[in-house]
Length: 305
Image (cartoon, rainbow, N blue to C red):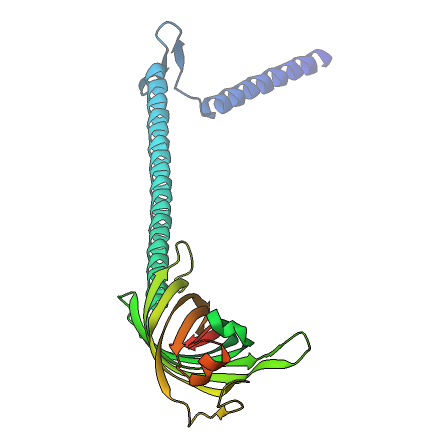
């Protein structure tokens, strides 16, 4: 019995082993396997696949071509960027030059306009005053005094030659002449010279000076009345005082010059002239002070165009 049982166990083990082998074979047959095999040839640099062979060198060349094209594209974009930058810079420089040129032209026009306005002349009126000094024989009996002048004139814009008329008043102080005993030998009362003058005026522009700074020369004739007391101790008319109404109108001449410059809306000027008037008073000769009334005013004033 024990031998039969032993045989049965062996038979069951064998059957189980056969069954397990069959199952393993079935499972193995159902596992998917790749039918592709990659073969690499070291000599040719090709990769073998189920679909064919791939040339690695061609792939590398293709990649290099892409990189070269990308480099060319980058270089082209960089060149375009530089060209655009240069064009913008040149345009900016051109605009700056154009602005500088326009500013220069505008400045030149403004200076030309200012010069034109500065040189524009025309009619003017002024007021001046200063001192007046006796000249020639008149100094024997008179000392300095004062002067007031009102000029009216016309200066053409395009010509240096103009005309001027003025009304002036010169007052000279009289003196006394004494001998060694302090006795009065002669006496000169104060005189006032009323003058109406007409002159030609020549303007001379000062080199390098402002557009309204110039020198000028004056010369002309005038009508004068010399009023006041002029008397001598030996004259039959000693002590007589000649009033403006009693004085006779006498003609004389004058010559001088001055300088003028712009001062705000006006012109500031300074001038001096020499006047000589033949008064022809009898007591001039008797008193020893001469036949002519000669004097020189020095004045400063303003005139408006």
